[in-house]
Every structure is written in C-alpha cells, then in structure tokens.
Image (tube, rainbow, N blue to C red; front, side):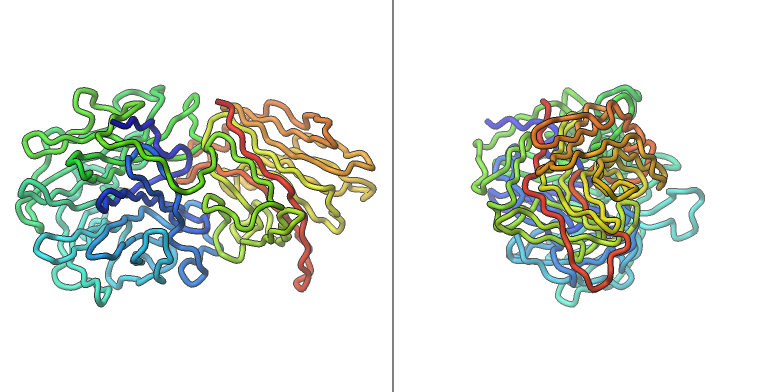
Length: 524
C-alpha cells in the first residue's frame, strides 16, 4: 500500500494526461508559452514522481515567439503502442494539432507532424482492439455556434505511418448537459464491451466538470451517463478550498486498479496564483460506468494505492527547498523554464556562476525576454537570487520577478539611479502592462554582494534587499491579488525567477550579469 498526497503535482501543471506502460506510469502536462514544452513525469507507484524530461526541447520542434502567454501548447495526450510513445497536442497559433513520437519517454522526441484537416483543439489518440488508431478532438459546432462554447467532439481514423487523418469524420457528442459549454479534453477508452468518451465541460473555471458517455460502436450513438457529471466541485460553493475540478484521463495499473488524473485549483480567499494543478482520484466501475472516489464523490487529500512504494532513481530536488549554486552545476535541470523560444535560453554556466545575458525585451513584452524561471508550488515561499554587484550602466536592469503573465507581475529590480551615481533597488508592480514603482532603496557604495528576494505569504509579498548580509525591506505587504487568474485572466499559474534587460542593447553586443545562487524555499 502506498499513499499519494493531493495534489500530486503542486503548482502550474494543468491538463494532465497519463500513460501506463507495464509497471511504469507517465504524465505529460500543458505548458502554454513556456519553453521547453510539455514536461514529462515518471512514477512506479503514482505517489512519488520524477521529471525525466520535456517533450519539445529544440527550435525545430517549437516556436512561440510573439504569442500571448496563455496561448501556445494546449492539452497534450500521451499514449503508447508497439514500442512507440506518442504525444498529440495543439499549438493554437502555429499549425494547430500535431504528433511527436519517441521510443523513449525521456526523449529525444521527433519534430512535430502537423495534421491536415484536424481542426479544433485538445486532440487524443485511441488504439482500438481492431488494430486501428483513431483521433478524437473537439471543434466548434459545424452548423454554427449558437453561443460561445457551443462545440462538438468528433472522431476520425488516423494513419500513424503517413501521419494523416483518413476515412470518415464524424461529430459524435456535444456534452452531457443541455446547452453545455466547452465540451473539451476528450479521451476514448474501450472497456466492458463499450467505447467510452470521457471529457471536460463547463469551462475550465468554477463550473468545470468531468463527464462520460458510452456506445457499443465507436461511431455511436453515445448514451449519456445518468450520473453525470461523474466528478465536479462546482456545487460546493466559491469558498471551498479545491475548485475548478475537471479535465481527467483514466488509466489502469498492473494490479488492475483504475485511477484518474485531473486538474483542480487551490484558491486563497477566492484567488488563484499557482494555477491549475494535477490531482489523483481512485476509480471503480458500477453498472459499466466509471465512479470516481466512491463514497466520497469529491477529491480527497490522500489516495490509497495498491502498489509498492517506490523512490525515484534520479536525484530529485526537494520540492520544498531548492538551492542552486550555479558555479557547481554543469547543466540546468529539467524543471527550469524560459519564455517562448529556445533563443530565450540566454545563459552560460561558468565557475563563477550563471551568466544571464541581457535581452532588449522587458518582462512586459510578449517576446523572448531573458527569464530563467521555476514554477510556484506553494502559497508561502521565498525566491532569492544572490549576485556580485553588476555593472548596470547604459540602462541595464536585472532582478527577481514573480510572474503571472507579461501584463501582471511583481519585480524587485536593480538599476542605475537617475543621476547615474549609484545603484538602487526598486519594487515594481506591473498591472495591465503599466509599471508602478512601489518603493526605491539606494545601494551604498562599496557593497560587494547583493541578494534580491520576494517573500510571498498567501496574497501578499515583501520585496527584500540584502547587502553584504544586511537585510532591508524595500516594499512590505504588497497585495498580489492582481497576479491571480481571476484578475489577470488566462490559463497559466505563476512562475518566479531571474531576468536581465537592456532596452537599448546594441545588436552586436553580448553582455551578462552573473547570478551565483538561486533559492526557492517554501514556508510549510
């Protein structure tokens, strides 16, 4: 017996898809406009997980330049068949639905195969017992949308040798409830002599739900489960601690047990900063219908799993304490993120630390700014960066940022003073793309080393400067409600890390500031 604790992936890990291969289990998540794209997790007990890579790691695989942060990669699905792993996904602004494949889930993965005629979003693959493979996805009502979110789920056979859709294209389902919005994230399964479509509906917010239908024939007609939705938290009210429950994927273990992975959010006073997280639920079957967490009817804090406890083989960083001394590192871990394109990976690891090369793009630009990030995974945490005093002449800036998106973020930034006589630290809140300087603290001459920190406690943050070991608060108890999805919109959770900007950077120059240490410490 193993006990999993929910969420199994805290923080920005939305739209989970799970794939079981023997005694190994893999989950892939959406990443939107972050690079590398689509993180891959591995486990043998569903409770303890390790990141083994990212799916899209090369420029030839992924371009997101200029895209708004909540665009990019939507809702991947991972499946395995005859020795090959497949991931199918949507790049919403650049080509649509595509497939990549690999013989090793840790990579490398192929370049994308974009599918002609596969309109809409949220594709999935289904390998039928007959030997055929089918594509299932969702698109706008082909007769014309009667309202926003009036979409249909459709099925078509796919040839994975030629990577193209073939044969009949049929709309088979448009949701469990009358006038439902956004039937999306569909997955096909075959069990008990039935084909099942399990999908999300109600939108990925407070009305989110998991529903299911079934048919004896893959083309339908599909019958509605009279118990739909099979899981939702929308009836618990706006003050319930776990909300937005939906977008599930089913799998069966080697022990014959069934589980679902799905997304939900943990709000603070009605605000979501960490984004949509990955949760786990137990599934049983009654009257040939899946039942989620029988006897509970809701997500639980823990899940008992009939598998032996397993510890990851890879050296794992404690999710609560992450300390990086860059001068001792040869490579960055798979957990690090950049924005949009491979060219944003402007760094070099040296014996002195991490050289972060300046970019002309600011944190408010929908472009490839220089930003090295980690996901926020706790409501209370501190992100700190230590660096020798940099040369910030000619309008250079660097600092630590807590980022919801390019229009909404909080920074503690180093820059030259207006008279260019010294350095200063500024606490800056960006709201709707407009910077507001909250406070300015001068830095005395002769300081050798600085540490910049953002200390987040729920819906408030302190911006802190430490000079040669002496700490001072630049701005205290700054409200971060603006950095929630309820205010800022979009689909992403907050990330946090270091950035370097030189707005007037000459095109041929390559200069950097050096970060010696970066730490993320949870207050748990």
